Length: 423
Picture 1 (cartoon, rainbow, N blue to C red):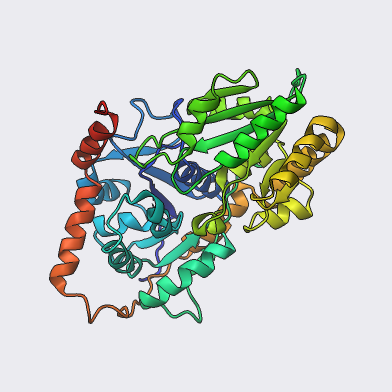
Picture 2: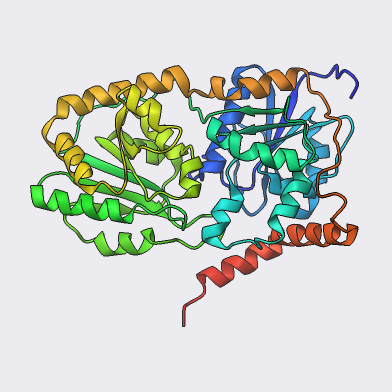
């Protein structure tokens, strides 16, 4: 691609709700919004593209947002006239026509194939082929953590990338450098917060049940559980939905549905500690949970696992407690410390804020992408390892399946099926 003399302009394509207009946001939507805010902090013009059925009726006035139909993504991109297109996830790539004068960036927002082991939302046979086909078309890629990078590199190798210099950088989740302040009145007794979507690859049920039992035994403390099913996709809810119903009438538990991001932050600021400890599995080992970063940003120390990338900074900075989720006796000891030692909890909360200021702000998050956008380079692709074994018809069928599953019609059918009365 010849040197582009235009000022950088990035179009961020996201198929999940952003944290605006009073609507609940997903982790992917929150990451896309934060990435855009980080790019703006670096002086780069940023526009968002959101599907019609995801976009609020009146978009936020401080963001440039273009609605689009799933089958008309090309038209939306042409309208935005970006120098760089950022796709939040590889599933969008095959809906977009490549252009030699426009760089294509993929933010690998999660290990979809591992999530699909639990959700069975997509065809596990066709997904790897479609993924490799999509990855071939990127000029630059991002992912959410160093452990995730090691997971994605073999996929890039299969897609024909030179792994001696892969165009894949880590962009850990970041939020506003102006952290929110916790204001009195503070809770009379410790309040534990657990929040997030109810998803089949995330199982906090044994932990939360143990917490409720401990609070009842100690006759002290409360649990606030905020969550619900995915607002955009009809994923199974796993075990957490049933637990929420089981404990919602407990006198020490408050169960709340999904909240708009600003309301969620306000609620978080009134809590004492976040509990984000879940059963271990292959997806959780790779996860860099956005909700955990939000809790730290709100000044909440976190009860977290001891097996993922975010565990070390939380433990080393004393921004919370890390433990094996199977160690329920150890969990009891942490709960007791929170109940009995408010000074340590408060000190850990301050450490959480310092950790975010030093590591997890959106200007740091967006810097690798901002550097690329100032000098975007089109990658000269090489054939993937599978090019000789995939018949052109198979590729066309895969594209047709993907287009259908991202169409407005498919979303309406899935939604109707999900919300229909059970017989």
